[in-house]
Amino acid sequence: MSSKKLDNLRAFCMNRWPEKMGATHGVEHWDRVAKFGQMLCQGGADMDVILAFAYLHDSERQNNSIDDEHGSRASAFIDTIRDTELRELSDEQIRKLKRACELHTIEHRTGDITIDTCFDADRMDLLRVGIMPDPKRMATKRGVELVSDPYYEVYYQEICTHYNQENKNNIIK
Ligand SMILES: [Fe+2]
Ligand SMILES: [Fe+2]
Image 1: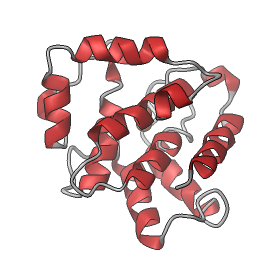
Image 2: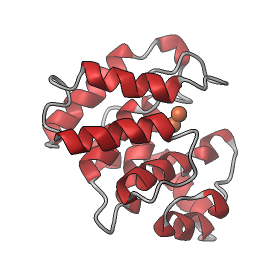
Image 3: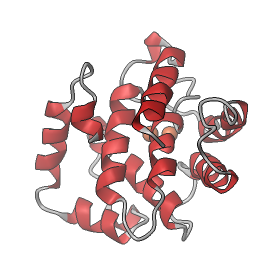
Image 4: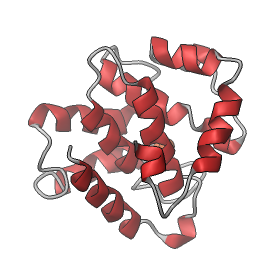
């Protein structure tokens, strides 16, 4: 996905996000999931799918606590923007993106490196709500390594500190 298309997708998702929903599952989280996705991406994982997941997986949340259906709703929503915001993605990429969104709160691991990287990118941001990601619950080898690193909390805080809404390139690069 070109960076312009990614910018457009990010802006599109931000515009739809109700202000009252705040930051816990909002753009600050999405940007960090994108950053973590880049840190995790290896072994044939599809970065375009992972970036699209970052901005879409929680976009259909209706509250910040229990909302079991938000992944399924995100998957259904993807169908409605398949020919507009997501037109650069292939049918196979859309299939993986939908599956990652649908399963991100349900499955531990699928065996698909792209989908599993999406899961771990989201899990790596659990510290925003004070939860240390559990290596046993990560889906990828790289995810296990990163959250097992004794400096994980330090670099997590650095990523949060450097977050700047006016200059998301600090995060996305
Ligand atoms: Fe979610
Ligand atoms: Fe999330």
